[in-house]
Amino acid sequence: MSELKRRIKSVPLIDNSNDKVKENHKTPVQKYNQISLRLLSRVVVVISFIVIIYFTANNEKIKIFAKQSDQISGKSQYLKCSPQYLNEIDKFNGCVPHKCKRFVADTVVSLKDVEGLLSIAKKGFQYGRSLGGASILDLHSGAMSKGQVFINIYESPYMKQLFTEEDFNLYRSVKEKVKHTIATHFGIEADKLHLTSPTFISEMTSKEPVTLHDEYWHPHIDKETYTSFHYTSLVYLSNYNIDFTGGRFTFIDESFNTTIEPKKGRLSIFTSGHENLHFVEKVQSGTRYAMTIAFTCDSKYAIHDPSVKKYNIPSKTVK
Image (cartoon, rainbow, N blue to C red; front, side):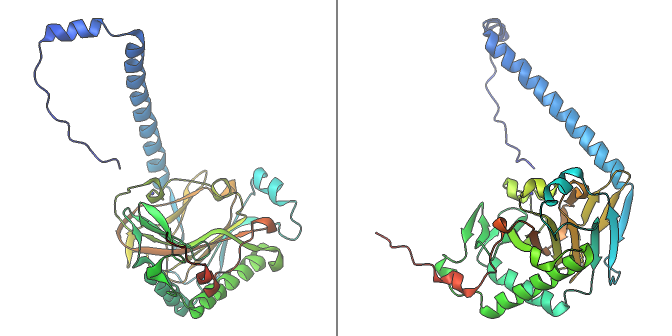
């Protein structure tokens, strides 16, 4: 989710004495603005330098939690729940985790499921994609990246009936597998979990960002970004170091970074609070596909499963 450099045209030479006169006639506001801009630019440079040093230092202390070459039946890393997360989720009986943690498994989602989800993604993205390096397809809202904006796939005449009931059945099947895995491994009741928005398939490439939506690599906390989230899950649809390079998923911990290398069919689940600050590395080459499936304990944020009924939106009358 780099700034484009602009060419600076050369200006005619002018008499230096005129420059001095102009400088002397600058208003206090102009002089203040000039000083403020210089100060601001220096502050930005210093902050950027500090951030680079911090993440570089942390990157030297990387713990690989799940390698692409590993076959993991189930692996957990337990964490202390953040107070903010516990205070908020505690009001939802039957939905509070026994412990906050991260969980990875390669045995929940089959390769057949993965190929089906990839087919859905590619069917959609052939009619869209961002100009930058990150595109999303949200089958619930219909939002899909196209250029610098989002279009609604259910309203586009070019995508009428593009997705079939079979596609949506597969989508629901994978969602249910993930939901019950969360319930089992976090010790909560499955019927207390509700699918929430945004839930989407992402496609990431090494293209330079064009909009802020393309800058996916910034560290963030899901609960801060999306109020409804309580449990975050990711299903990877492509292989690290085979289909793409870069693009690893990294948790930022106090002493080191904990990294997950994407693998087809790999499921990653974690609590969405401050205990799981994370980022995705920039993709260096190839194409990275993944599906984000979010769950909430708050029924008011629940969303319905997508279906072909979405296409029954009345056509807008053109006057």
